[in-house]
Length: 65
Image (cartoon, rainbow, N blue to C red; front, side, top):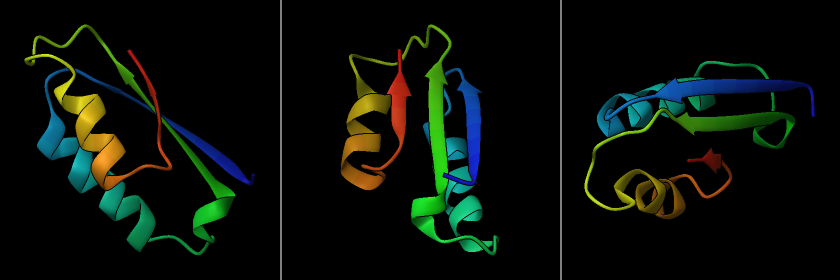
């Protein structure tokens, strides 16, 4: 791992998706050289909406509730 990126979020699935896509698009590292950790700051979104989204769209991202 060359770099770890930690993102704290609160009710912002759309912004997280844009952010992750930008990270993967605009860097000179391979995808396996980047560790991304999303920390949910007590979101009020229904159920595990963010977790489910990450599992389906960005399975390599670590999620902390």
